[in-house]
Image (cartoon, rainbow, N blue to C red; front, side):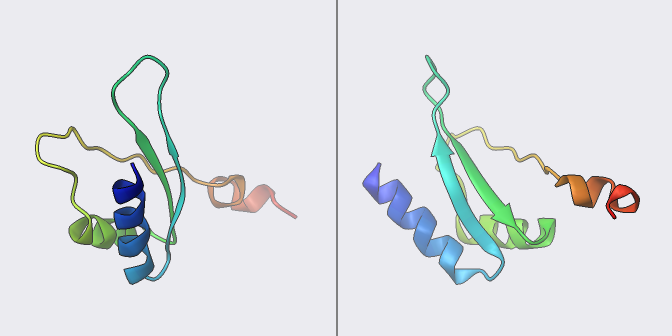
Length: 76
Protein backbone atom coordinates (compact mmCIF):
# COMPACT_ATOMS: atom_id res chain seq x y z
CA UNK A 1 0.00 0.00 0.00
CA UNK A 2 2.76 2.42 0.89
CA UNK A 3 4.53 1.77 -2.43
CA UNK A 4 1.28 2.40 -4.31
CA UNK A 5 0.66 5.69 -2.53
CA UNK A 6 4.27 6.77 -2.99
CA UNK A 7 4.11 6.02 -6.72
CA UNK A 8 0.79 7.83 -7.21
CA UNK A 9 1.96 10.87 -5.24
CA UNK A 10 5.20 10.98 -7.23
CA UNK A 11 3.47 10.78 -10.61
CA UNK A 12 0.76 13.31 -9.70
CA UNK A 13 3.44 15.77 -8.63
CA UNK A 14 5.01 15.51 -12.11
CA UNK A 15 1.87 16.75 -13.88
CA UNK A 16 0.65 20.25 -13.08
CA UNK A 17 -3.04 20.46 -12.30
CA UNK A 18 -3.35 16.89 -10.99
CA UNK A 19 -3.85 16.14 -7.29
CA UNK A 20 -4.55 12.91 -5.42
CA UNK A 21 -7.52 13.50 -3.10
CA UNK A 22 -7.73 10.02 -1.64
CA UNK A 23 -7.86 6.29 -2.05
CA UNK A 24 -11.05 4.38 -1.24
CA UNK A 25 -11.78 0.69 -0.74
CA UNK A 26 -15.31 -0.59 -1.39
CA UNK A 27 -16.45 -2.79 1.48
CA UNK A 28 -16.22 -6.48 0.68
CA UNK A 29 -14.39 -6.04 -2.63
CA UNK A 30 -10.77 -6.48 -3.70
CA UNK A 31 -10.37 -3.21 -5.55
CA UNK A 32 -9.74 0.43 -4.85
CA UNK A 33 -10.72 3.79 -6.24
CA UNK A 34 -8.33 6.71 -6.64
CA UNK A 35 -9.98 10.11 -6.26
CA UNK A 36 -7.91 12.44 -8.43
CA UNK A 37 -8.67 16.11 -8.93
CA UNK A 38 -7.61 17.50 -12.30
CA UNK A 39 -7.96 20.86 -13.97
CA UNK A 40 -9.00 19.12 -17.19
CA UNK A 41 -9.62 15.69 -18.65
CA UNK A 42 -6.54 16.19 -20.84
CA UNK A 43 -4.39 16.61 -17.71
CA UNK A 44 -5.87 13.43 -16.29
CA UNK A 45 -5.04 11.52 -19.47
CA UNK A 46 -1.51 12.95 -19.39
CA UNK A 47 -1.17 11.64 -15.84
CA UNK A 48 -2.49 8.19 -16.87
CA UNK A 49 0.28 8.01 -19.45
CA UNK A 50 2.79 8.59 -16.64
CA UNK A 51 0.97 6.25 -14.23
CA UNK A 52 -0.69 3.40 -16.13
CA UNK A 53 -2.73 0.81 -14.22
CA UNK A 54 -1.04 -2.43 -13.18
CA UNK A 55 -1.11 -5.31 -15.66
CA UNK A 56 -4.44 -7.12 -15.57
CA UNK A 57 -6.25 -4.34 -13.72
CA UNK A 58 -9.62 -3.15 -14.96
CA UNK A 59 -9.32 0.58 -15.36
CA UNK A 60 -11.87 3.28 -16.10
CA UNK A 61 -12.50 6.85 -15.14
CA UNK A 62 -15.47 9.09 -14.59
CA UNK A 63 -15.59 12.85 -14.87
CA UNK A 64 -17.42 14.73 -12.13
CA UNK A 65 -18.28 18.40 -12.38
CA UNK A 66 -18.76 20.87 -9.57
CA UNK A 67 -22.10 22.60 -9.26
CA UNK A 68 -20.54 25.76 -10.67
CA UNK A 69 -19.22 23.88 -13.70
CA UNK A 70 -22.55 22.15 -14.34
CA UNK A 71 -24.80 25.19 -13.78
CA UNK A 72 -22.69 28.31 -14.35
CA UNK A 73 -25.72 30.43 -15.28
CA UNK A 74 -27.39 29.73 -11.91
CA UNK A 75 -24.50 30.88 -9.73
CA UNK A 76 -24.75 34.58 -8.78
